[in-house]
Amino acid sequence: MPIQSNPENPETTIVVNSDFGPFSLDLEQVEIAKEMVNLGKKKPDERDPFSIIVEEYLGGQYLHYTRYWTPNLGRLMKLFSQEYFVEEDWQVIEEFKLQKTRKVNPIFKVVKIPGEEDQQFLHTGIRLMKHFGGQRMVLAYSTDDDGDERLSVYYVRQSGDRPSTSFGDIGSMFGYRAIEDLEEAFFQRGPLKGRFFDLDFNFIEKDTDVGDLIAWDDDVKAELKRNVIDFHKAMPKLEALGMNSSRGIILAGPPGTGKTMIGKWLAASTGMTSILVSAEMIRHRGSIKSVYERARKLSPSLIIVEDIDTTGGMDRRVADHPLLGEFLQCMDGMVKNSGVITVATTNHSQSIDPAIADRPGRFDRVIEVALPGLEQRLWILERKVDGIEKHPSVTKEILKSIANRSKGLSGAWVIEIIQFAQVLALSRKDELMAAEDLEASLDDVLARRGLAYRIDSMSVENQWKDDKGGFGSLWG
Image (cartoon, rainbow, N blue to C red; front, top):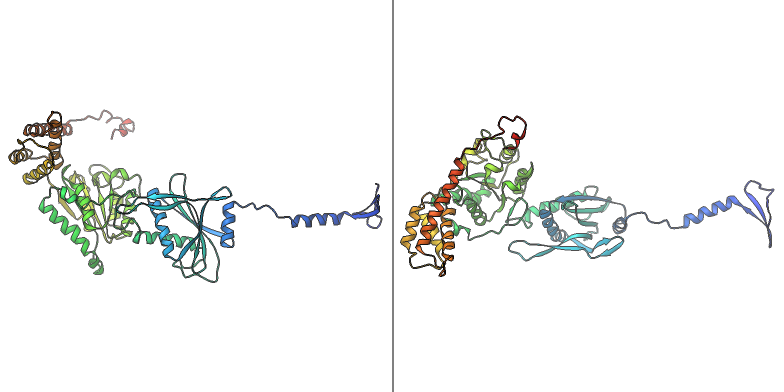
């Protein structure tokens, strides 16, 4: 069928001679019709499935705020958030995990808290939340590649009606305020409050019977009662009077005298939130600062620092320690440690920097935990022997003799006398501990204990001492 141009509008109109007769076609109108058809077509939604769900649920474009915590702390924070948001009048409308575009069941995990049943918490998933006042938000629980726990709050920035929440203005600060209020409540009444844990937030059982395992020196126990237990009870009144409610105490003495056990006894006896710190837990600058920040939030609290001479209190006259300044700043800096007691142990009190104890508020008490006396050594022997199958030759007189001849041994070495005597007894058929086992074990322990002092007195020459800037810098 031939096509002719239309003489009336030669630029855009053509005439088509068809079998049904000629008809004209305006190409400009054809293009307009195409555009109208395309506009009527639904364009594919290029947003990711999560964004689609959030925008549809919130009813508009959203903002979000995210916070991260280390694994152990983050799990506890996620667990606490479940209870917290319910208390703040939020209800869960739906919870799920996205698998591409499909909703599947979220991932729950279990937290073990001393003295409580195992508790489940949402580890990975999405919660659609609605407040009784009408406000909506979306909580996303996730984990980073490096294991940090993450919680994100998604919300619509809007003005006008405000729900009656504790989060204040629901503008651009809503997500930040939600997480801030969650974290503040966590430290006020969360699962860490009143418990015993280490710097990595691993829980430690509070053993109320640990005091029965210590060969107490009455003077030491009285000092601890006065300076820790009684001081803790007086904290509220001291704060009301505007007086210092923080204190630092050093437990100094030879290895094996029970200093760490005393710290655990204090944690169990006071009921305070207690944090254990040791050198291997401090991995970078700021670790000590974070301990004191959390101790203040959890106050009244007790910080137990094991071997402070290796943790950061090393005397600068002996060697420079990069964390000494951090310790000094944390204990007596711009921010007061109200309600915080620090108890540090050391085997080398002469190696503690004087600046750490030069004023109240730092370590203003040094309690000497000496080697056990005769009565204490006898108490340890009798307690350890109790319950062991013994030969009639193991009498109280034999134990008194062993106690008398073990002068200068720490409690740990006295316990070793009984333990090695048991090994000797088990090597025989009757397996009964006899007096001769105790005698042989005492001789063995005295020899081994003497070896430690011989090693300590051996002269060691640094063969790299003249190698300036070379391998000698690695010798230590």
